[in-house]
Amino acid sequence: MSDLTTSQKGAAAEAEVAAAAIRLHLLVLRPLADGGRYDLIVDLGGKLLRVQCKWASQRGAVLMARCATCRHTPRGYLRTTYAATEVDAIGLYAPSTDRCYLIPIDDVEGRAAVLLRVAPTRNNQAVGIRWARDYEFRASPRRNWGVDCLPHAPNGERALRAIR
Image (cartoon, rainbow, N blue to C red; front, side, top):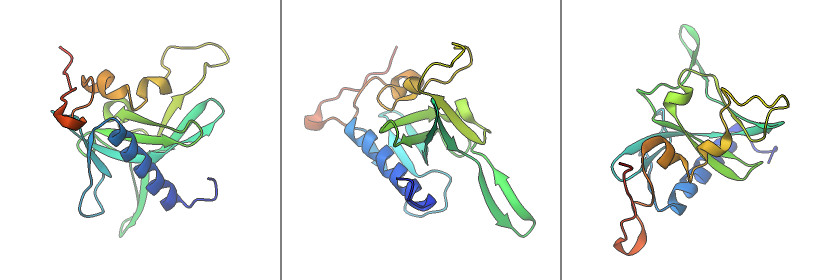
């Protein structure tokens, strides 16, 4: 997939994150117009998450996705990162693991890149490490937003439970 353009990678990441949410019976909404800071809205039942989708490349045992944007303005280049006022989560698709990850913006706000470790460090450091497994799409809604299961399951089955 290294022959994809940046735009194609972004579109693929958005499609994969949306598909991951749909497989969990979550409702996925898309903005009518481009230009916003988020790509999708994921309905967790009692909470709507504004999700910015990113392609994550693997370097060694670390998944990395750039979260800084740069655009040209009349005053020169403007570099920005994502803030909680703009998005609620970063959704990553990593083709090397063929998995999607959902990271609360509070965990990465203001950072130029998201780094998730997929294997132990060589020196066995564990403190301060963001483990990819903690943000896997299937587990992240429960861990980070208190949502246990599938709010839009078929046949009217209501499987969403808030963790009390």
